[in-house]
Amino acid sequence: MGAAIDAAAEHLGRCGVPDRRREAEAVLGYVLGKDRGGVVAARPDPLDPAAASRFSSLLARRARREPLQYLTGEQEFMGLVFHVDRRVLVPRPETEELVSAVLRAGAPRGARVADLGTGSGCIAVSLAHARSDLSLVALELSPGALEVARENAARHGVEPRVEFRQGDLAHPPREWEGAMDTVVSNPPYVSEDEWSSLAPEVRDHEPKEALVPGATGLEAYRAMAPAAWRLLRSGGLLFLELGYESEAGAREAVEAAGFSEVVVFPDLRGIPRILQAVREGGRAG
Image 1 (tube, rainbow, N blue to C red):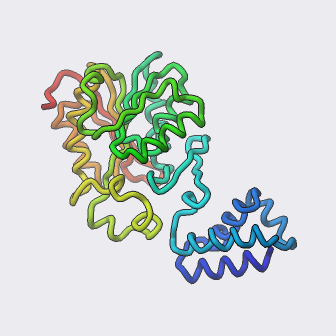
Image 2: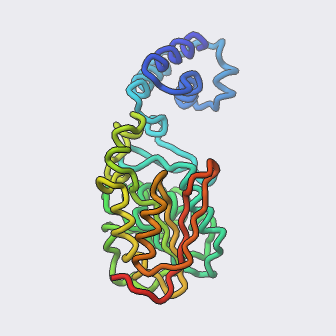
Image 3: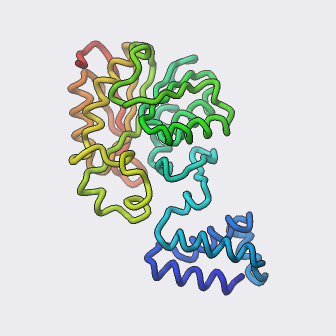
Protein backbone atom coordinates (compact mmCIF):
# COMPACT_ATOMS: atom_id res chain seq x y z
CA MET A 1 0.00 0.00 0.00
CA GLY A 2 2.91 2.32 0.72
CA ALA A 3 4.20 1.90 -2.83
CA ALA A 4 0.73 2.63 -4.19
CA ILE A 5 0.58 5.90 -2.24
CA ASP A 6 4.08 6.89 -3.36
CA ALA A 7 3.26 6.23 -7.01
CA ALA A 8 -0.09 8.03 -6.74
CA ALA A 9 1.49 11.08 -5.12
CA GLU A 10 4.13 11.25 -7.84
CA HIS A 11 1.46 11.03 -10.54
CA LEU A 12 -0.69 13.73 -8.95
CA GLY A 13 2.35 15.96 -8.62
CA ARG A 14 3.08 15.66 -12.35
CA CYS A 15 -0.50 16.76 -12.98
CA GLY A 16 -0.10 19.86 -10.83
CA VAL A 17 -2.30 18.73 -7.95
CA PRO A 18 -1.39 20.67 -4.79
CA ASP A 19 -0.42 18.78 -1.62
CA ARG A 20 -0.11 15.63 -3.66
CA ARG A 21 0.68 13.12 -0.89
CA ARG A 22 -2.18 14.23 1.33
CA GLU A 23 -4.51 14.06 -1.67
CA ALA A 24 -3.35 10.55 -2.56
CA GLU A 25 -3.86 9.42 1.03
CA ALA A 26 -7.32 11.03 1.08
CA VAL A 27 -8.40 9.21 -2.08
CA LEU A 28 -7.12 5.90 -0.76
CA GLY A 29 -8.76 6.55 2.59
CA TYR A 30 -12.08 7.02 0.85
CA VAL A 31 -11.64 3.74 -1.01
CA LEU A 32 -10.77 1.87 2.18
CA GLY A 33 -13.20 3.66 4.50
CA LYS A 34 -10.35 4.90 6.68
CA ASP A 35 -9.22 8.32 7.88
CA ARG A 36 -5.71 9.56 7.08
CA GLY A 37 -4.30 8.03 10.26
CA GLY A 38 -5.76 4.68 9.29
CA VAL A 39 -4.22 4.89 5.83
CA VAL A 40 -0.78 5.71 7.24
CA ALA A 41 -1.07 2.82 9.72
CA ALA A 42 -2.02 0.42 6.92
CA ARG A 43 0.90 1.33 4.63
CA PRO A 44 2.58 -2.09 4.88
CA ASP A 45 -0.58 -3.92 3.79
CA PRO A 46 -1.21 -4.83 0.14
CA LEU A 47 -4.24 -3.51 -1.73
CA ASP A 48 -6.72 -6.12 -2.87
CA PRO A 49 -7.52 -6.04 -6.62
CA ALA A 50 -10.97 -4.46 -6.23
CA ALA A 51 -9.64 -1.64 -4.04
CA ALA A 52 -6.66 -1.14 -6.34
CA SER A 53 -8.96 -0.80 -9.35
CA ARG A 54 -11.21 1.70 -7.61
CA PHE A 55 -8.22 3.66 -6.33
CA SER A 56 -6.80 3.86 -9.86
CA SER A 57 -10.12 5.07 -11.29
CA LEU A 58 -10.58 7.80 -8.68
CA LEU A 59 -6.94 8.81 -8.94
CA ALA A 60 -7.34 9.35 -12.68
CA ARG A 61 -10.24 11.72 -12.01
CA ARG A 62 -8.23 13.63 -9.41
CA ALA A 63 -5.31 13.86 -11.84
CA ARG A 64 -7.71 15.59 -14.25
CA ARG A 65 -8.12 18.11 -11.40
CA GLU A 66 -11.64 17.07 -10.46
CA PRO A 67 -12.19 18.23 -6.86
CA LEU A 68 -11.67 15.60 -4.19
CA GLN A 69 -15.14 16.45 -2.83
CA TYR A 70 -16.76 15.36 -6.10
CA LEU A 71 -14.87 12.08 -5.92
CA THR A 72 -16.07 11.34 -2.40
CA GLY A 73 -19.43 13.07 -2.83
CA GLU A 74 -19.07 14.82 0.53
CA GLN A 75 -17.88 18.03 2.17
CA GLU A 76 -17.98 18.98 5.84
CA PHE A 77 -19.57 22.35 6.59
CA MET A 78 -20.44 23.79 10.01
CA GLY A 79 -19.81 20.38 11.54
CA LEU A 80 -22.26 18.65 9.18
CA VAL A 81 -21.46 16.43 6.21
CA PHE A 82 -23.12 17.57 2.97
CA HIS A 83 -23.54 15.69 -0.26
CA VAL A 84 -21.95 17.51 -3.20
CA ASP A 85 -21.53 16.75 -6.87
CA ARG A 86 -21.03 18.66 -10.11
CA ARG A 87 -24.47 20.24 -9.83
CA VAL A 88 -23.35 22.45 -6.92
CA LEU A 89 -20.39 24.42 -5.66
CA VAL A 90 -18.23 22.81 -2.98
CA PRO A 91 -19.11 24.62 0.30
CA ARG A 92 -16.19 26.72 1.52
CA PRO A 93 -14.92 28.00 4.89
CA GLU A 94 -15.77 31.59 3.90
CA THR A 95 -19.42 30.62 3.73
CA GLU A 96 -19.19 29.12 7.21
CA GLU A 97 -18.31 32.65 8.32
CA LEU A 98 -21.50 33.88 6.65
CA VAL A 99 -23.61 31.36 8.57
CA SER A 100 -21.81 32.24 11.80
CA ALA A 101 -22.54 35.94 11.25
CA VAL A 102 -26.25 35.21 10.89
CA LEU A 103 -26.23 33.13 14.08
CA ARG A 104 -24.32 35.78 16.02
CA ALA A 105 -26.87 38.41 15.03
CA GLY A 106 -29.46 36.48 17.01
CA ALA A 107 -32.64 36.47 14.95
CA PRO A 108 -35.77 36.53 17.14
CA ARG A 109 -37.31 33.23 18.14
CA GLY A 110 -39.47 31.85 15.33
CA ALA A 111 -37.86 34.16 12.76
CA ARG A 112 -38.30 33.56 9.04
CA VAL A 113 -35.09 33.41 7.03
CA ALA A 114 -34.67 33.43 3.24
CA ASP A 115 -31.59 31.90 1.60
CA LEU A 116 -31.29 33.24 -1.94
CA GLY A 117 -29.30 31.02 -4.30
CA THR A 118 -29.11 28.07 -1.93
CA GLY A 119 -26.96 25.75 -4.08
CA SER A 120 -26.17 22.66 -2.00
CA GLY A 121 -28.42 24.01 0.75
CA CYS A 122 -25.47 24.34 3.12
CA ILE A 123 -26.55 27.74 4.47
CA ALA A 124 -30.25 27.00 4.97
CA VAL A 125 -29.67 23.50 6.33
CA SER A 126 -26.94 24.65 8.74
CA LEU A 127 -29.13 27.46 10.07
CA ALA A 128 -32.09 25.11 10.50
CA HIS A 129 -29.89 22.57 12.27
CA ALA A 130 -28.41 25.20 14.61
CA ARG A 131 -31.73 26.92 15.40
CA SER A 132 -34.69 24.56 15.59
CA ASP A 133 -37.07 27.51 16.02
CA LEU A 134 -36.26 29.11 12.66
CA SER A 135 -38.48 28.79 9.59
CA LEU A 136 -36.50 28.88 6.35
CA VAL A 137 -37.20 29.34 2.67
CA ALA A 138 -34.53 28.63 0.07
CA LEU A 139 -34.51 29.74 -3.55
CA GLU A 140 -32.41 28.17 -6.31
CA LEU A 141 -32.52 28.54 -10.09
CA SER A 142 -30.84 25.23 -10.98
CA PRO A 143 -33.16 22.19 -10.78
CA GLY A 144 -30.14 19.93 -10.23
CA ALA A 145 -28.82 22.01 -7.36
CA LEU A 146 -32.29 22.07 -5.83
CA GLU A 147 -32.31 18.25 -5.79
CA VAL A 148 -28.99 18.25 -3.93
CA ALA A 149 -30.26 20.83 -1.43
CA ARG A 150 -33.40 18.81 -0.69
CA GLU A 151 -31.28 15.70 -0.23
CA ASN A 152 -29.08 17.52 2.28
CA ALA A 153 -32.08 18.83 4.19
CA ALA A 154 -33.43 15.28 4.46
CA ARG A 155 -30.00 13.96 5.47
CA HIS A 156 -29.90 16.31 8.44
CA GLY A 157 -33.54 16.00 9.47
CA VAL A 158 -34.56 19.61 8.76
CA GLU A 159 -36.60 19.11 5.58
CA PRO A 160 -39.95 19.98 7.25
CA ARG A 161 -38.62 23.42 8.24
CA VAL A 162 -37.01 24.42 4.93
CA GLU A 163 -39.25 25.32 2.00
CA PHE A 164 -37.34 24.93 -1.27
CA ARG A 165 -38.44 26.79 -4.40
CA GLN A 166 -37.02 26.99 -7.88
CA GLY A 167 -36.48 30.54 -9.07
CA ASP A 168 -34.15 33.45 -9.76
CA LEU A 169 -32.71 35.14 -6.67
CA ALA A 170 -33.65 38.50 -8.20
CA HIS A 171 -37.31 37.47 -8.42
CA PRO A 172 -38.38 35.59 -5.27
CA PRO A 173 -42.03 34.59 -4.84
CA ARG A 174 -44.38 37.49 -4.16
CA GLU A 175 -45.88 35.75 -1.14
CA TRP A 176 -42.51 35.99 0.60
CA GLU A 177 -42.48 39.79 0.38
CA GLY A 178 -42.45 41.58 3.72
CA ALA A 179 -42.42 38.26 5.58
CA MET A 180 -38.72 37.74 6.32
CA ASP A 181 -36.70 38.70 9.36
CA THR A 182 -33.40 37.79 7.70
CA VAL A 183 -32.18 37.37 4.12
CA VAL A 184 -28.86 35.63 3.54
CA SER A 185 -27.04 34.88 0.31
CA ASN A 186 -23.76 33.69 -1.11
CA PRO A 187 -24.40 34.91 -4.66
CA PRO A 188 -22.18 34.45 -7.71
CA TYR A 189 -19.46 37.10 -7.52
CA VAL A 190 -16.57 36.05 -9.77
CA SER A 191 -15.91 38.26 -12.79
CA GLU A 192 -15.22 36.74 -16.21
CA ASP A 193 -11.58 37.80 -15.98
CA GLU A 194 -11.20 36.22 -12.53
CA TRP A 195 -12.88 33.00 -13.66
CA SER A 196 -10.34 32.41 -16.41
CA SER A 197 -7.53 32.46 -13.85
CA LEU A 198 -9.14 30.17 -11.25
CA ALA A 199 -7.64 26.81 -10.31
CA PRO A 200 -8.66 23.99 -12.67
CA GLU A 201 -10.61 22.32 -9.85
CA VAL A 202 -12.94 25.31 -9.83
CA ARG A 203 -12.84 26.59 -13.41
CA ASP A 204 -13.16 23.23 -15.15
CA HIS A 205 -15.48 21.35 -12.80
CA GLU A 206 -17.66 23.54 -10.59
CA PRO A 207 -20.82 25.04 -12.18
CA LYS A 208 -19.86 28.34 -13.81
CA GLU A 209 -23.35 29.79 -13.39
CA ALA A 210 -22.96 29.53 -9.60
CA LEU A 211 -19.69 31.45 -9.77
CA VAL A 212 -19.96 34.06 -12.52
CA PRO A 213 -22.97 36.42 -12.71
CA GLY A 214 -21.56 38.51 -15.56
CA ALA A 215 -18.58 40.46 -16.78
CA THR A 216 -17.95 42.47 -13.61
CA GLY A 217 -18.91 39.95 -10.91
CA LEU A 218 -21.26 42.52 -9.34
CA GLU A 219 -24.38 41.75 -11.35
CA ALA A 220 -25.97 39.44 -8.75
CA TYR A 221 -25.59 41.98 -5.95
CA ARG A 222 -27.25 44.65 -8.06
CA ALA A 223 -30.12 42.37 -9.07
CA MET A 224 -30.69 40.85 -5.65
CA ALA A 225 -30.50 43.88 -3.35
CA PRO A 226 -33.93 45.30 -4.31
CA ALA A 227 -35.45 41.81 -4.07
CA ALA A 228 -33.99 41.32 -0.58
CA TRP A 229 -35.34 44.70 0.50
CA ARG A 230 -38.85 43.68 -0.61
CA LEU A 231 -38.64 40.38 1.29
CA LEU A 232 -37.59 41.88 4.61
CA ARG A 233 -39.75 43.32 7.33
CA SER A 234 -38.76 46.74 8.66
CA GLY A 235 -35.68 46.24 10.81
CA GLY A 236 -34.78 42.97 9.09
CA LEU A 237 -31.19 42.07 8.34
CA LEU A 238 -29.43 41.25 5.09
CA PHE A 239 -26.23 39.17 5.05
CA LEU A 240 -24.10 38.73 1.92
CA GLU A 241 -20.88 36.90 1.23
CA LEU A 242 -18.39 39.09 -0.64
CA GLY A 243 -15.78 38.24 -3.22
CA TYR A 244 -12.18 39.38 -3.03
CA GLU A 245 -12.94 42.73 -4.70
CA SER A 246 -16.70 42.96 -4.17
CA GLU A 247 -17.00 45.22 -1.15
CA ALA A 248 -17.44 48.59 -2.87
CA GLY A 249 -19.84 47.31 -5.52
CA ALA A 250 -21.95 45.30 -3.09
CA ARG A 251 -22.13 48.19 -0.64
CA GLU A 252 -23.24 50.52 -3.43
CA ALA A 253 -25.94 48.05 -4.51
CA VAL A 254 -27.47 47.57 -1.07
CA GLU A 255 -27.38 51.27 -0.24
CA ALA A 256 -29.04 52.09 -3.57
CA ALA A 257 -31.82 49.62 -2.67
CA GLY A 258 -32.47 51.48 0.60
CA PHE A 259 -30.48 49.49 3.15
CA SER A 260 -28.67 51.32 5.94
CA GLU A 261 -26.22 50.59 8.78
CA VAL A 262 -23.98 48.68 6.38
CA VAL A 263 -21.16 46.85 8.16
CA VAL A 264 -18.50 44.67 6.53
CA PHE A 265 -16.62 41.99 8.47
CA PRO A 266 -13.23 40.59 7.36
CA ASP A 267 -12.46 36.90 7.14
CA LEU A 268 -9.53 35.24 8.90
CA ARG A 269 -7.16 36.51 6.20
CA GLY A 270 -8.36 40.08 6.64
CA ILE A 271 -10.30 40.15 3.36
CA PRO A 272 -13.70 41.95 3.52
CA ARG A 273 -16.02 38.94 3.42
CA ILE A 274 -19.42 39.43 5.10
CA LEU A 275 -21.72 42.39 4.53
CA GLN A 276 -24.54 43.06 7.00
CA ALA A 277 -27.20 45.71 6.42
CA VAL A 278 -30.53 46.80 7.89
CA ARG A 279 -33.81 47.25 6.01
CA GLU A 280 -35.56 50.31 7.38
CA GLY A 281 -37.84 52.69 5.45
CA GLY A 282 -36.40 53.18 2.03
CA ARG A 283 -37.03 52.62 -1.55
CA ALA A 284 -36.10 49.47 -3.55
CA GLY A 285 -37.72 49.67 -6.90
